[in-house]
Amino acid sequence: MDSGHSDPVSLRTVLPYALKILVAGGFGVGKTTLVGSVSEIRPLRTEERLTDRSVGIDDVSGVESKGTTTVAMDFGRITISEDLVVYLFGTPGQDRFWFVWDELSLGAIGAVVLADTRRLVDCFPSVDYFERRGIPFIVAVNCFEGVQRYRPEEVQIALDLDGQVPVLLCDARRRESCKEVLIELMEHVMRGAPGVAEPAGAR
Image 1 (cartoon, one colour):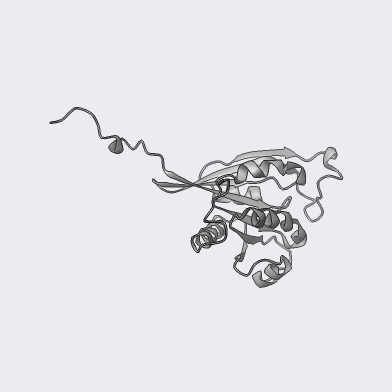
Image 2 (cartoon, rainbow, N blue to C red; image 1 turned 30 degrees about the vertical axis):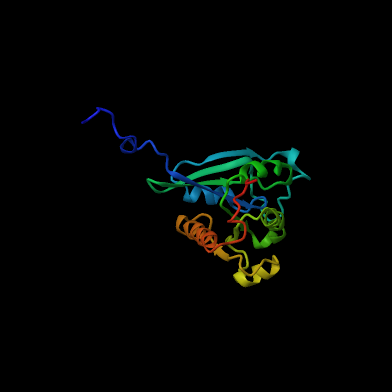
């Protein structure tokens, strides 16, 4: 007998499963560009113009043309299917905004650490952060025009990375290149990278 009530499942009231990925790295490395390149929505950005007040605080050597900086986060979204959505959170690169990282990392399945070979030392804080918290990560070298290229193996040695941490080259301006980066991260997580057994924020 038909009770007249609809099946709750048929109403599509169940929300899609969401995955959270962080995009980290040093100041001016291309995090905002990567999120914007791959996001299906207009990304939420919290950028402010660099002013004289940042002199002596933000190191712009190597990225002198940069006129803005992220002060909270970048946010983008990718819909894989009606049941799966990926949310991207770009972290601020300056030391004075590190307090934001702990909040952003809660629930993240993994992270992309963007690198610029002109300022490779800027990667170390991000690498250390994710290693200490057991969050799986990969390193993606953003290949800026006119900059000397290095093989992924050379970058891996320079950063003293575990041999299981993937390193690949990318162009943060190109959607397809950014997709390859995210696919590599997902495969790294699925292969059982350290930290997967206990998600970030678990107690």
